[in-house]
Image 1 (tube, rainbow, N blue to C red):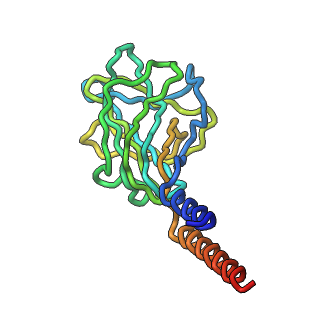
Image 2 (cartoon, rainbow, N blue to C red; image 1 turned 180 degrees about the vertical axis):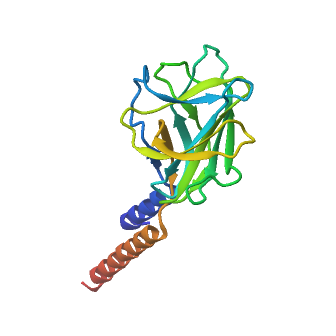
Image 3 (cartoon, rainbow, N blue to C red; image 1 turned 90 degrees about the horizontal axis):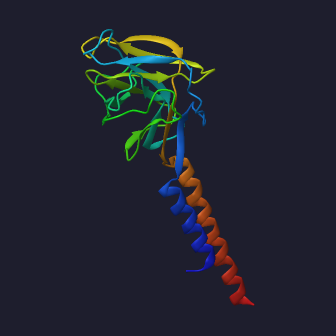
Length: 213
């Protein structure tokens, strides 16, 4: 295979394989969580239980592989557990059932610089489409989902227990980063294919010209 075709194949292969992409990020490297505000997350075995979810809009089409949340536990216990779920959006509300759920056994210490991180996910998303990420604490867990200072307002959902329908409101967004592998749009793939064909035709024309000399 000549060098031109190798380059064209490499370009197409790189586009098809995708690369690590940020679908949403309002943390942007922030880590000074000490003293910042938060949304309360409390299990149903405690007084005033509450779960919380917030909406985000994906900036690209692809698959989510990693989600990082500024969730930290408040009561000193090392085992503040719960479930993180991703829902489809239904007219700025959460759909009836999650498209993915992951249990966690512990969350970072209050006022630490650490984030609650979920890796190895495989959740398909579409560019320009909204989704919801929910944190539902276990029975006696007491946590907070910390709000990034200066955070823009967005759609929030909360409920006092798992059986209650959520209440929706517009409020400051808590910290969340959503990353994954982007999939090229069909038009982009078409443009790459046309480019590769153009390179091939140019190469063939050049070879034919050389034979006529």
